[in-house]
Length: 304
Image (spheres, one colour):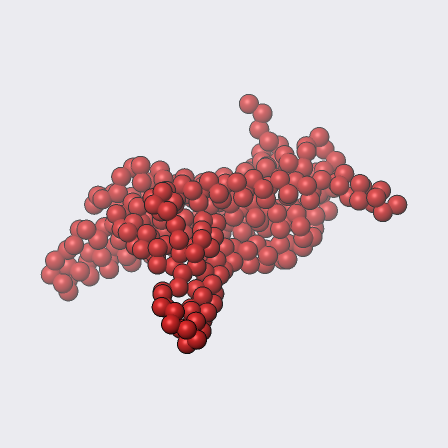
């Protein structure tokens, strides 16, 4: 099996630098800090001051560790991918790379695969911390596999966005800021859009009440609620809710602020993961188009 040369090169360089070791140390250090604190607050504090230990709270412990690890993934992936292409351009090695037999798509996939490999390494290195939950029970091995799949899907999703901006901008700083800005829009901006639509509908309903005998109803965002399918944080929330058995909170939120179907509500995780996968392919495709040197030649020929 032939391995992508760019992936092979990046992987060899990455594991030899102290940067990778520091990332693994910091990643697992923060995760262990939150995990041990949550473990203490759930059991030690409860038994010492409450007199009893509620073993049902082990699912809350799992939810905290999973949420923190997912947040670290969102924070780490843009830093790993935003400078993948722009960094080559700044070092003036991109032209040399493009003159090789590799296609722009192979370059993009190699850079993305090397970043995803680091995230997979981080995810597997955190298994001893997550195993704190398995020492008590309440979480199955399939739940852990589903969580690992979420990490990989999210890493590809955010990583494709980071590489897209890395191809779009010549400077790593601009690409990094844009990637984090896009991530901020996906995680928080989508909720602001829902809130803005609800507020506007509420204002409109209030005006109708004062002018006519219109019966004011609780406003919602309608089908705009489906924009949350592109929100990776919402995908993680739906997975955790289903695993710990509190999925009714997700359904309540969706029905209160929007219009959805029972099928979408029960399969939110899989639908959002599929949509984010398609968006990843789109970002990868346009990244290869931006990186294609023949595109610039065609543009100059058209001008001439």
